[in-house]
Length: 593
Image 1 (cartoon, rainbow, N blue to C red):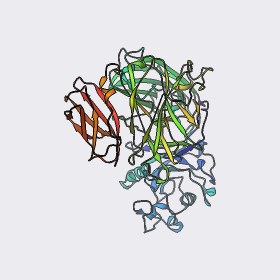
Image 2: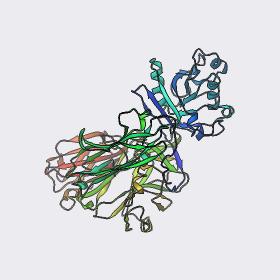
Image 3: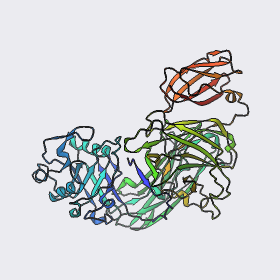
Image 4: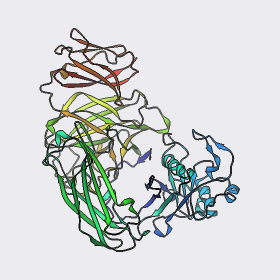
């Protein structure tokens, strides 16, 4: 996991190169761990002999072995104990190791000496590639991905070297410890294999959101998805029987399928494949999985890892998210990002729909991460909602502007972390739900002035190709020191989620009267409820969504509902009251002593 990225304030997305070369690390075997793994390589660092790994001639496809330099000591410098011999720093030990490194990719632990020295010693013993994994656990502030510097020895290294996170390293090591043959490819892929059709996430039309309320998805006039992708021939052989497909399942059952006839695609060429849009008469709640595929009819693709791309859209009652979420609506990705310099900044989601008035916006979920192991407890952020009054057809409309997106929000509230909720989605419910207006553009921002705090983003899916379409709407905006822009960090999207519900404010008299006191509450919380009987229930959740307190009946004292919160730790809590007629009212309470 790439934990900390400090990016320049505003980056304009560049044009897509149809056959852009990339260096990849892909495990070919065993199938249980096969796939592409995130990594950095020495082309990302400094002082390495092999400055450019984009030449397929420098790629390696071979078996892995574990480094063993014979050191009998134990290393306990990284929060756990492991053999020092994994570090590959004892030059005599490496040269006399009982492990045959010749023609192999060597897996080595970070620690005790320069990256360049580890790789150089392995190279001297005949290694054709090196994978170095972070000795710090992924949860450690020093964990995650880094760009390796070559140091003194790196300039002499001419074989590919990759750096991976601890979790990836342990996955590879576990297979080697079990005696499994692990085969990996490291290098530039295009031109490395004979038969190799491919697709890339940044050249695929993705569904518009990864979580979407059914209230704005009644039928095909509310929600339809354009389908298509660019297929490439990365292999050095021409293909005469390429086939492209698109399939959509609802809770595992196929509801859409389309496959092209076979067609020719020469080496190095690409072709755009368009499919009829996905449009349904209705969209019941559940999982809609969109899958694109590229295949060779009657043949075998030598590198199948990039022959399929899938996205799961979760139709639901009240969560709106551009980033991926799991079945519990927790974000699947946590890439911690912030600008390189700022006084205050905000990632912000754009929301706009012709039937927005069907819903209210009740709150947001988001996640953050502190650098250098700093505590997040007590840190505050602002949650702001703005109206964006520009009229434009899409991102490519020359009239698009952020000039009407002022820094005067229609809603501004503060959120304070009451515990160490790092990399965990926390919930902030608005004091009063925000009624939405049809065709009004809303920008919902998490605003931070914390220079040691990163806000979490995702790089999957990439909406870059969607945004090249003529009527594409903005996904998110970036604000730095009061300046807004629709051009931001390439392929990133905030893991912010909008919490929606059906718009029944006009008939819900309960919510308007729920004004609890005292805030913060230390022992007994009083909630005035003059027009509500004892029938109903109370549920109290922490900011991670765990139920911490409940009342199956509302235990009122006259017009007051009294709730004993003395057993709850100091924190923010979400109170949800369900009345006898089924109406839900939610509000946030601070417990503090």
